[in-house]
Image 1 (cartoon, rainbow, N blue to C red):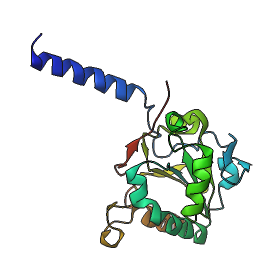
Image 2: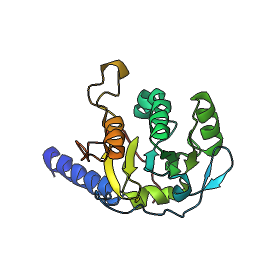
Image 3: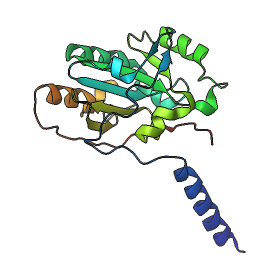
Image 4: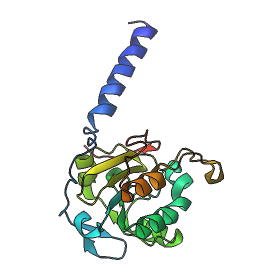
Length: 202
């Protein structure tokens, strides 16, 4: 077998292996999955997505402690939380990186990370990435916004510039929340999620 065929075989195997782990992503309009599934957050509380949701909706962020892309956006999380609260939308971050629990994404690590980052919203461990699987989430960060009826209205990225908050031109989440609460049609309901692949276990 020549080098080109070996390379092609490697790419095919890699593609199948990498895509086979990720369930199909929720479609816009889908109902909130696993609304009553209990998770534990960094404060030791046991809560559900349904309990976190507020009058006008729910913002779910699949996040972690170890991904460079999360670190780029992390300073913007408190601002997202403020915007969500002002618009009566609950917010929760979920860490689905089951394969990295002993490499920086365990609960003790999450507690330290949340404290260092001044999180004022629940940061919970998604054990065995069960909720991420139900959502079809593939990366961290990966953001899902649900309306007051718990229907998905936006999925994707936080904004259009991970590297420089001052250079952002498109505030995807902020715009989606404000348009949702105003009863307007969302300018965009789907954007490309940029981040690290969720560290799943087979």
